[in-house]
Structures are given as C-alpha cells and as structure tokens.
Amino acid sequence: MEQLDSSEQQSAPVWAIFSDLMAALVGILALILVWVIGIQLELSQSLAEEIEKREAEEQRRIALEEALEDPLTKGLVTFQDGRIGISGNVLFQLNSDQLQAEGKSVLESLIAPLQTYLEQHDELLMVSGFTDDLPMHPGNRYQDNWGLSAQRALTVTRSLTELGLPNDRVFAAAFGPHHPAVPNVDAESRAQNRRVEISTVPRATPSAENAGAEGQRP
Image (cartoon, rainbow, N blue to C red; front, side, top):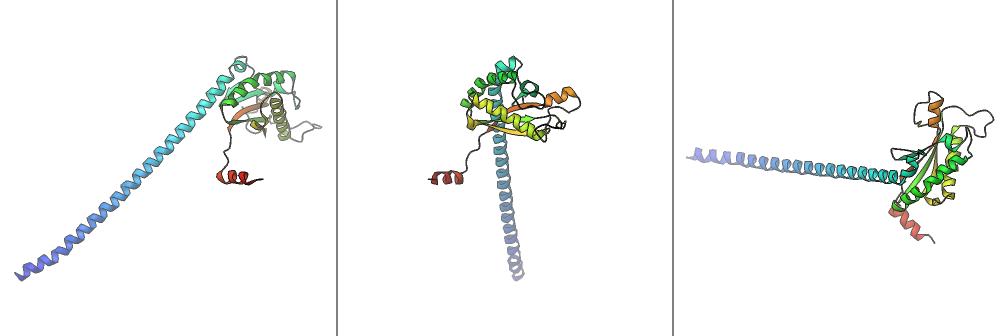
C-alpha cells in the first residue's frame, strides 16, 4: 500500500511537467500564428498600395494621352510610357539651341492640353534634353553634349512658360548622350536620339518639419 502511494506521488510531477510543456507549446504556436497573420496582412496591404499606385499612374497616363489627342493625331509629337517626345530636328538645327519656327508651332500646340492636365493634376512637368553620341564640333559654343542638351531643355522650358504654362510647374533636366531612345548605329538612329521629352512628375509634399519651419519664418 505504501508502495502504491509512493508511485502515485512520483507520477504526479511528470504529468504536471507534461501539462506545462503542452501549454508552452500551444503558446508558441499561437505566437507564430499571430506573426504569420501579421506578415500576411502587411503583404496584402503593400500589394494593395502598389496596385493602387499603378492604377493611379495608368489613369494619369490615359488622362495626358487624351489631352494630347490633337497633336498626336497630327503626328507632331509621340507619346510613350507617359513621355511626350519631340524630335530635335523639328525643334533645333544641328548643334543649335535656337528654337526653329516649326518647333515653336509644335510647342504652341501643346500648351492647351498641358494646361488642362495641370489644372486637373497637382504635378510638375519635366522637360528633358537628349543628344546623340557624337562629340561636339570644334569651335562649338558648348564643350560637350551635356551643355547642349541642358540649353535645349531650358529653351523649351522658357518657351512653354512664355506661352502660358506656370513657371512653378515646369523645370528642365539634361541627359546629354545618355539614355538613348535607340542604339546610336547610324544617322537615322542618331536623329531619333536628338530629342526633347516632356514628362509628368509628382509634386513633392513638404514634410511636417519643413512645413513647421515655413510657418515660423517672418
């Protein structure tokens, strides 16, 4: 009888320990489950935000393309991946930054649709200048293609603002011979790469810190 009581006393702690282990295991599994669910929710939210962002970009592209219907139909400009392309041969003579009459007419045709677009979207317009890969001729006023592409972009930017676009919504950028539209293999391809592009850029939203600093200025 004493032996039976002794064995019962010895077995009781084993079941207690097993019970504690099971409880701990269930707790760990619950934590893992909560972590997995949290990761899934975060991934779902990120995916939804990415889809929303892409849909908004596509809507902006469609809106700009619709606004440019007339100049696109007339073949005055191209429109690809949200960028308006204008041939450098239409805008400028070779190695020149002076806007030609034909080029000014093309820019005039863009003013109305671009104004309409800017009124409906809180964005900026980036005017980008590109050249081919040939070096500048000796005696040219520009040391390299960077300078020529920069001045051409500035010329178009100033023309757009003079024709009515707001000064604070348009800016210039220069890419020189970099980022060609097609490989520079012959005269025809190089002519395609001498171009000016106009693309939309989201307006940067000021941070809370910068907004507070602006408010403190006298």
